[in-house]
Image 1: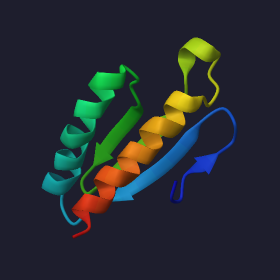
Image 2 (image 1 turned 120 degrees about the vertical axis):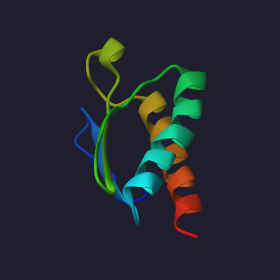
Image 3 (image 1 turned 180 degrees about the vertical axis):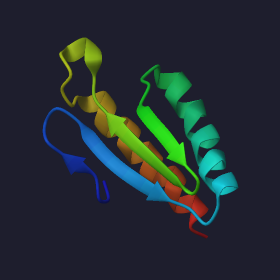
Length: 83
C-alpha cells in the first residue's frame, strides 16, 4: 500500500489526478469493487483530488482486513490512471 497513513483506527490517503473528470472516473471505477465487497469508504472529491478514509465501523471503528483489501484495490485502480 503506497502512502497510506495508518493509526490503527483508520487508513487515509489523498489521490491526485490531472483533472476533475479523471478524479470522478477513479471514483466510479472504484465503486464497482466497493459494491462487490460491500465495504464503503468515507471519501470526498475537491476538483482533482479524492480524499479517502477507510475504517470498519462494524468492528468498532478500527482497521481490518477489508480496509487493507480496499486500499490495495484503490492503489491498483489509481496506477491505471497514471498512464
